[in-house]
Image (cartoon, rainbow, N blue to C red; front, side):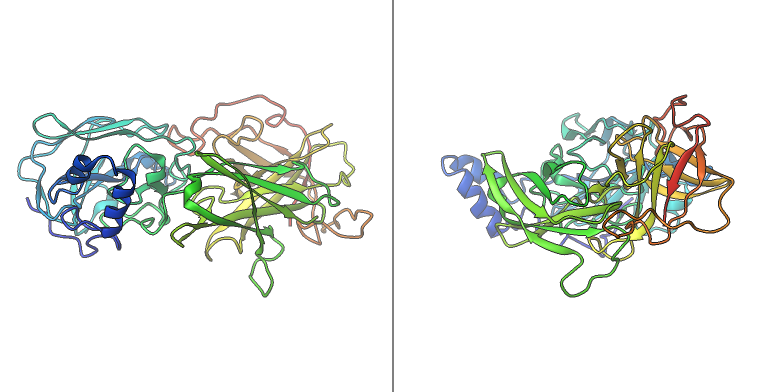
Length: 468
């Protein structure tokens, strides 16, 4: 069984090891001036000669009643200039699968090992599809081990669903794609969430043009709960400081201005380089005051030392923003307050993607909590909000918002002393409502780790709700 070369071939700028890239040669020389023997070994024309694990779809989302695990796959890629004989190769950790005799992977070709190769996903494909394998890919991450027929290791590494690894692969639709075959497999810098829904099996990865460094290490806003009188400082920390030349902050008011125009949005502010070490560099920028009940969304554009630009957070993440909520305490209510921003487009992202959000002021609290990237969708009795893993709504991954006696007509939003109305809409509805019990879904759904809870948000308590 011989696989024909994919028409996509090699990714732009990626060359087989038998044709070394002069830039890579200079880079290796720079870091290995005292290691000429290592330099010669790394650049030997046939030194690679192996397949690489190029893409992993470890947690496809469920489709209606179908378990998403049926669409799991691992993709191998041959970056070499020679055909590879994979007879007897074996996945021995993570999943279990032994390659049959006669499997050959041509130069520049792709191969899929699918959990269910008979699934309709794999019908009428031009690339080789093998399987089924035993077991499931762990949603929380695990070690993958690919062995040669003689038992020696081809690749062994642990992927994860926790930062700094991409989060968008964990039940949100994206696969985990390797940026370039020659980057180390165990380094999270080498991987991104696919920018194509369900990944790119059998094709060039969608993230090959994304620079691997730097990654966003941390960020913070000061003050963390601003009012409409407060300018806000964003402070970010990036790794790989030698790769960073400059950084620009880009920001917008979510749901207010949804198309770019002269002068913004997005509004762009140069960030100031503040501190630096061998491992990280810190930048800061100031955002002017915003109207109350505004959700301010940001991302940063990094200019790298080679002239390439990189936007962070990665656009395929479930929450591709750094964000904060502005509130003056102007809403008077004896009930908890819930703000809901339905899916809206963003000038910070490429056209076509919409992102929703939820903010909540618990009873007795003075500052709201916000959940940017929470997915809001219609439900049978109202609406439901599904929250990002690790950013649960007071312990729940999903809540139902079920209206009780909705008003016949919209009621205007509260008007603060400044005379400005809420950025969540000039005509804001409200109603008494209560979240239903938390929805745990199937064991494979994006909220699969939630458990039934009887906290204050899953009881029959009323709540005041605002949304556009």
